[in-house]
Image (cartoon, rainbow, N blue to C red; front, top):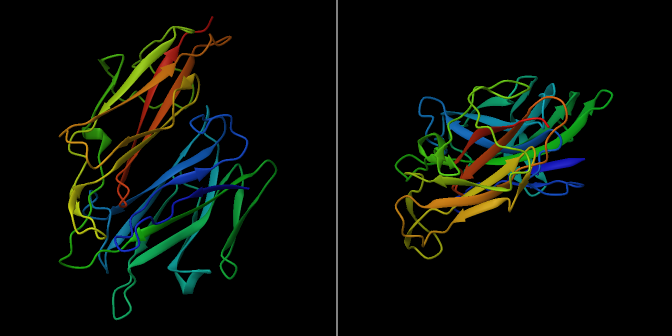
Length: 303
């Protein structure tokens, strides 16, 4: 059983954080099997906003990645008002599907008992079919070789007239590899994209830099009452080679208007046979509920 858990980390602001507890991985940044790396909330009609209002519809999209060819997926989720035991009362909605990426639309309740947060809980099944029990709030995965990742997250609900929260946007940021612009490659399931930089096998360390342009918002921290910048946390993952760490953090006291995050990647040995596409997944969070992600690729020629 594997978990990809997204708990709220600020009781009043009801922000989101994403963490994953994966057993048996040599490194947390290594993509050696199908993994769930995060979830993104977008308000339908105003997709930059991460906190929906009562009566609005929020779209929750999950980032599921694979070491090579994408695995077939099935998934099932319950949306509810959270309680200490899991859910309070009947589910707000139930969603099941086999789309990739997993995505569900949630109509936020409006009325006298409007919740301040909603919880999404369920599972994503790689090479399996989900079987959901709404009464016990559990999902099993049926099928030979099925892999289940239990996943949960919270959706903070804003109030009319209150400050809101926009998600960071990696598409607006400057991403480079060895000081050269590194655009997103053409997406193909296997093999190298013709747009990907070619990196020689065993060529040592290479430098990945993200310059965060306009990702941070200022907000009033509820405990101290002080206005401050958001914290940015970027998680980086790779399907081959070696990263020197999993996280880059930009603290609120960083004064730069466009701070930079740098991580080193060491190229792998030459693959046998065909050239190898190495994919990098970057997941950026503002730790208040805003999330975005981007994928990059390099091609390592075969020996």
